[in-house]
Length: 447
Ligand code: SDX
Image (cartoon, rainbow, N blue to C red):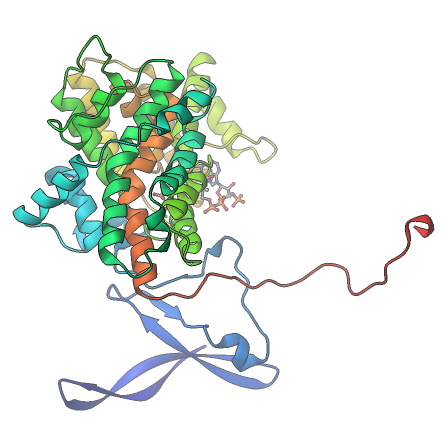
């Protein structure tokens, strides 16, 4: 039940009564008042931080945190009902169209778009930290060729901390944390590309300071010792847009993992490594790989879209329409809308006619006209079309979630930084115990 109480509030030395909200709950004949907090976009939350103490032990339960906020954040605003996504107040539509990924990374991490001097210094620092320690090359060589690159990437990122032991106790040294941030943003594409080269048993290609962030990644992925990578600006522009669209998404599974691990004051490398592992799951970032595998399966099965939509609706069938549905977006995912348009443009400019795109569009059309999907607000999400562009660029399917990691890195970093700057307590949820009551030990021979 929501009710109002008067509250004294002094702003600009003007004394006035402002009605502020409280929530009242009644438990065991007693009434408890809980404060309401309101964000800058009028989102409201009931603050239960004092609930257990005030009520003598009551906690809340919310599997999957579908109704529970873990923090207040100034980084990303998401309106799931209206399909709005903004980084630090800027719409992704504008940023994807007008900005570079490094500019957006700076914005998300430091809170403002950089001026020319700030951007120049940031880009220069990133460019000059792209190399990884030569000793790390032997780590790659120790992995089997079939090693999934997400397992390699998560391990390599955590291993970076062993080459920078000073990063382990950076709690309050802003300059040292900034150096780690720059190292991570600079080295993740190198680690990603080298994991691919290792899987192909090809020699690694070193970063080039003459190339920009996206060009450098493509060169490390596809150049060979005998041939340069021919930079195609259509591909560079598509990659830049995809990375921007993945850059942050408030408190999703992997970001919440990064915040939770970081809340124990674990270093940034370890926290990002944990985020990469969480993103790997097919219900999360791993969905972009699962979407392409699903489209290929439907294509190889003759392209009967209706049959597969029926399977997705059948509760007895484990098949789900990968790339569809979202915890927050109960309307279209604005990123999917932008990526779908980019899909058409990139494939057209590259002269590629990919049957998987046709199947994806048919799937979307059939599903969006179907009551099962409409009644559950299931729409294509960021992962539904992204794999088709990655495939057109030549990125292997198993690397798709690695691409998601490169895009999401600035968001993970910014969220970790914000959590630490706000001195948030170590994350430690409660539970309701449902196991055995106390019982005595029985010796082995008597059981
Ligand atoms: C990402 O959180 C983020 O912001 C994540 C992300 C980011 O940028 O960080 O946006 C990136 O992870 C996007 C999501 C990628 N995952 C997939 O595409 C996998 C397929 N989608 C689903 O598994 C599912 O939709 C989730 C996991 C995305 C969301 O699941 P929820 O919110 O827990 O919803 P649910 O599983 O409880 O589903 C509600 C209903 C259920 O049916 P009923 O029990 O009501 O009968 O919808 C059904 C589900 O069975 N449903 C689907 C479906 N997704 C949900 N049915 C068929 N196909 C699907 N894809």
